[in-house]
Length: 435
Image (tube, rainbow, N blue to C red):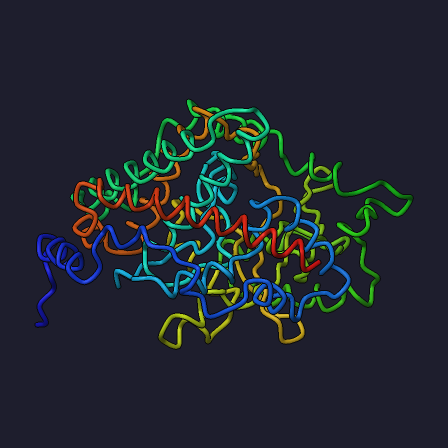
């Protein structure tokens, strides 16, 4: 029988990685490492998107450095690939930033708060998630403190240190727990963190009936999607036909009991919707369905998924081959405590799509809520949620062994996040000049 390393051996393997990549090495950022033009990479990422929406994506990226950061994952992926890597491979979110966590309803109806955007998920070095989220904390601190006249650098440093300390502490705790307890582990204290509490309150109000009132209007023939160009556009029957036809393949991606529940809903209308910042220009469809009467609406989102921006920089067929909707679903299920019961995938006209519920008790964080102590408290919770996701989908013993007491790694993360936030601001200005 092949030897399976013990937890102690895996922890020692993590410590040994420090000799290959020192924890202080993660502080490094130097624009001279680049072998690409960031503006050109952004332009390349627009290829294949709906032409009429490319301008809108640029507008959202030009709104602020944080807006640029959200839409420029390909730039950071290329940059991270040039830096020292631990070689500790994990399922990563890929787009871990302060606004990609949110509230949603679990299959049993309880409200949860977790990482909730996995468009870029892939198997990669665990530290890439930490570097991206740490940078987003610095950018959030700068954006909110600029509006409120506070000490942005002080808030940013405190938030990043709290984030890393929280991550390190929980990954170490989980690495010492029984495996089945790791699978069951829940992060508590959510209601006591004001930005999270606000998101949960929004999620509580975001019922299917609220979505019905928000997205549809009553006509003599029944309710149909509103027209709110360019962000919401009702499709013609001919345009809707391939979207509705894709539901058959989507249904087969669900578990049998969930297929049964979905089969009790009938589709009434289809629309095209613009979502997010990074996803603007990708094909995103909404299907409005009705179950047991008009008071039982279900909204399904069919969202185009190109390959992860990290795939060109990672080895192995799993990074670039296969169905991209399936990639997102599997990554989400691996990292989340519980996932949407209608999470699946399908294909339309040779393009891969993720399918999920839309706005079923979902609530997001607003950047305005992340100021001062609110940012620091939120950073602590981000560290816990990311640690749980990594422990669920990777080897917590390896990571804990590598991080040690976390002091050196935390200091390195502060230095990197501030330097890369500066780089992001410079890239944003360059994009503005080019437009």
